[in-house]
Length: 297
Figure 1 (tube, rainbow, N blue to C red):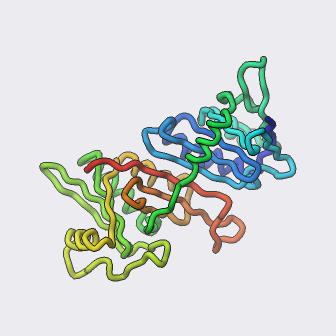
Figure 2: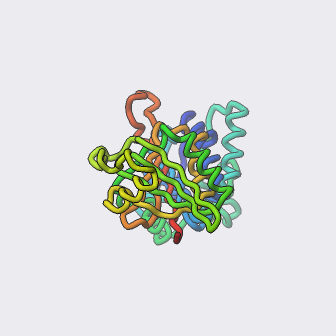
Figure 3: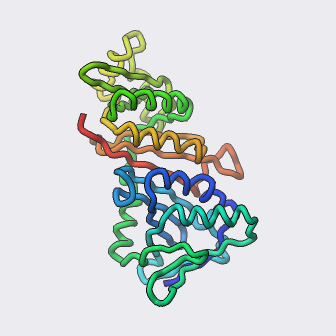
């Protein structure tokens, strides 16, 4: 097993300024999966209160490829777990001291524990079966039938979620193919809801301009869309949704796509980024995805 490489300045900045602080909001530990082409930072229910977090980087984004080596007997994949705060502290320290080079290397100390250079303790490298399980965990499975882009209404969405949290800890989230997102809280004493209208829908083929009858009250628009199959709803934990929405302040995505899985198994929120070299293109080398568990209504 061999792992070494020199971080790019851009990659190190992405980690310490945006992605590691985001990951730390969901749990103190993270599982790292390294391969020859990609690097993943993954949090499952082992690391969080139920939210599944996956940050994916092309290897060339994080490392200078001429220095990067990732070799193992299991498809050249290496995985382990580490404390987010420790790695974050090392990278911030390197940035603060204007370190010219940040090298990453697996080393054995005293033949017992495995460490990354810069003294960031990690778990023992995963076994082949554990690596395979982590590879499966990073896959989103099938994408949702329809997504709305929350980015145009992100400030409003965050404010709505914060307001609803004061009423109850669970809300109904509905996503409509006409570009609507609804949040609704109902308790024995109060019902409070909000609608975000005319959001972009992806894929474009999922868009249904007749999904909502704007001549009707909001509650009837939603019920009609649910009855016709033009909208889907699930119940989510508001503190988890709020945490995901607030991470956009750190990662600054160009799109925040929100969808409900086929069958209502989870909510999928995907941060899409602009290519730093060509702002009119999507950055295919970096993605950040969240899977939120659903609750009984």
